[in-house]
Image 1 (tube, rainbow, N blue to C red):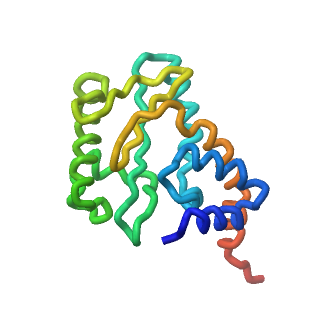
Image 2: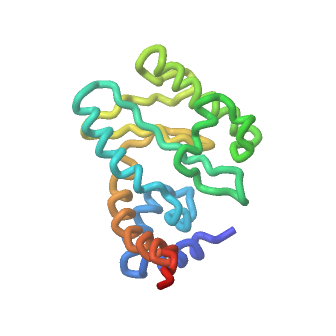
Image 3: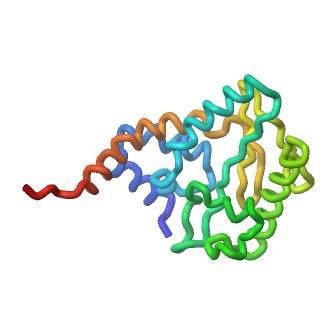
Length: 186
């Protein structure tokens, strides 16, 4: 397992020392529980437009709830959650997805997510006894249920990080794509 310092050094090498300063500072503020190396696998491509959508939607109606699945996957020594990793929890069938299995955690998180989905389906509001107090988002404040081992609601928690992450990771992704281009034989 990588230490915090090793993770920060890895990000500096990949992103650039100058560019990584603000990124690492915002990441630590947003995700104090995570190693900076997790920056490299964050789903910022979806999250940025999602923040804009939630704000616009909250401007139109009084019922927009936001959540972010932050529970590491029990896979390959532990992985940050990938896009759609929460699907088995939604459908209440985590027993069919080996990567979800963590004693004492899987069942609790599955109940939180499933009960929230069922409450939303029945009433239009995901609030239920398993969830912490979870207000609807407003145009000014996104109240995000961060689902993890200890789930909690946070206000605009990643709104500063995501644009900086996108700016810093754009060149990294371009380099990765360039390396993956097949050579064309003439």
